Image (cartoon, rainbow, N blue to C red; front, side, top):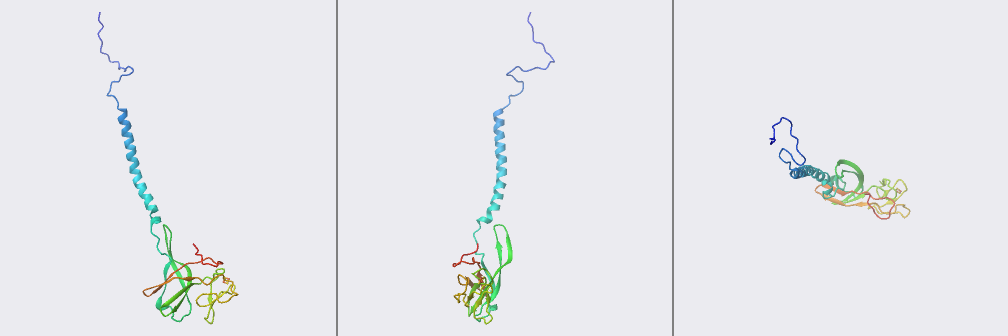
Length: 195
Ligand code: FES
């Protein structure tokens, strides 16, 4: 006698190699995952790159002539051929910060007519501040008695200074005297900028 299959309430168990639902699509799922990771990565990289560019932008700026600074009104510099001392202040700019109007040194300005000469007040021997002699005929250094004429040239062979006083570039801009301020290493025969 034939045995007909019987309906049953027992849960059916798939035999190995079979399933009862729609077959999963593992390859499509894998590709979708890769695409999602790539999209997420791109979404993360864009702002990251913007941040890096913003952080590096100051390093890409062209350098300005930051040492050229106004020192005095031309009319305020006596036209008497005698050196007069002026303080130098300037903005100090590093890659990310601007430090405004810091005192960085002083200069002697000597005006004759419309011509203005500038000398750094620092003695090239060992860095003391040079004074104008009482009779206003020369500079003298109080530390070791170096002596310079009013143009800044060493005028006494006994002076220990290895070079003349350090001259600085001057520009007259409108009614102002601008100086390209720079300090130089003491104790050297040649002017070597302090960096
Ligand atoms: S520091 Fe000026 S003579 Fe020595």
